[in-house]
Amino acid sequence: MMLTDSRWQSTAVSRRHALALAGGSLLAALSLPVSGLAQAAGGRAVPSRGFNLPGWLDRKDGLSPGEAVLEKLRQTGFETVRLPVNDTLISADDTAGLRLIHDGVTTLVRQGFDVIVDMHPSTDLHTALRDDFDAGAERTIRAWTILRDVIADLPASSVYPELLNEPPMERTAWLPLRDKLAETLRSKCPLHTLIWGPAPYQGIWELGDTPPLADDNQIVAIHFYAPMAFTHQCQTWDTTSPLARIANLPFPATKEMPLVRERIAALRAAGDEQAAAMIEEQLATPWTEAAIVSEFAGLARWSAAHDCPVILNEFGVLNFCVDAESRTSWVRAVRQAAEANQIGWAYWELDQGFGVIQSRQSTEGFDRSMIAALFGADGGG
Image 1 (cartoon, helix red, strand yellow):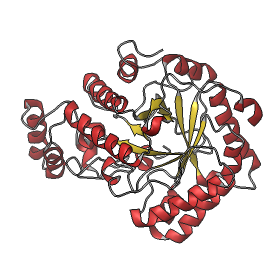
Image 2 (cartoon, rainbow, N blue to C red):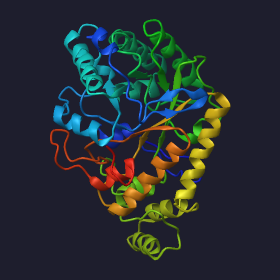
Image 3 (cartoon, rainbow, N blue to C red):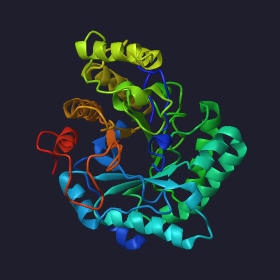
Image 4 (cartoon, rainbow, N blue to C red):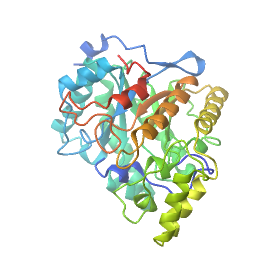
C-alpha cells in the first residue's frame, strides 16, 4: 500500500502494516466468468471486478466468509478474489494447512470467482528479505515449492498465483528472485497465469525501468493509494505517522480550498508541522479525477509498449474519518480510469478499515454507495 509517483509521494506505508493481520478435475470443468474481464495487451483477458480478502488463509485463526455472503457478493457483480496467504503457514508437513488453502480456493472457484493466490510476506519473511536477503529469498522459494503443488491441482482458467506482494527490496534484487519464483512455479504450473509487481511498493512510477518476465502468460500488478494524505487519513496502526493525525480532508481538493486551509492551519496551531507539510506537499498537484486519469493513461502506455497486461489489485480509502461522498468519488475515479485503459481491478479490501461490507459473516451491511462507486449507478449485479 504505497504512493504513486513523486508528485504525491512523501511517505511510505506497507499494506502489511496497514492491517497488521491484514477436486481439481471437477473444478477444471467450471466456466470462467467473463463479464468483468478486462481485455488487455494482445487481447488477453485479465481478472477484474475483485476484492481482497485478508484475514482468512493468512492467519492461524482466520475467519472464512459465509457462503451466503459470497453468493451475494457474486450477485452484486464481484468476479475476482485476491486471497493473501502467509508463508509461515505453508509447510510440507502441514497437510491440513495445505488442504485448508486448497479447499478455500476451491470454494471461491465453485462460487464462480477467479482467485488470485497472493504470497503475502509474514512479518518474519518481510524482515528476512530486508535484513538477510539470501535467507529470505530461500524461504520464499521454499514456500512456493510447497504451494505450487496445491496450485497445480486448481484450474488454470480461474486461479492466478501472485509471486510476492510488495517485494521489500530494491529492483536489482527483486528481478532475479522474481524470475526464480516464476521458474519454480512453471515447473508444476505450466498453464497458470503468473502475477507479479514491481518492487518495493508496486507503484506505477516503479514500472518505467522494470522489464516483464520472459513469459507469454503473465500479468503485472500495481497498487494505487494516491494521495495517501487522503486515502490513509486517521490511520491507526502507526501512531507516529502524520497520517494518523490528518483528518477530514476531501476529494477532489486543492491547497486553496477553505476546508483544506483550515485543516493545515489547525495542525500548525497544534505544533504539527510534519502533518501540515505532508498535506501541502501532496497537494502540490491538485487531487483531481484528471490527475488519476493521467496516471492510468501512462500505465496503459507501459502495458502496450511491453505487450503485458496489467491489473490494479489494490486501491482503497479508509473509512475512519473521511466523508462518504469524497470516499466514493475517489474510488469511482480510480475504477473508471482502470476500466478505460483495459486494466483489471481488485479493491482493498472487503470488511476491515477499507471495506465495502460490515462483516464477511452477514449479508446485511453492504455499503450501497461504495458498491455503486465500484460498479456504476446501478450498484452492480
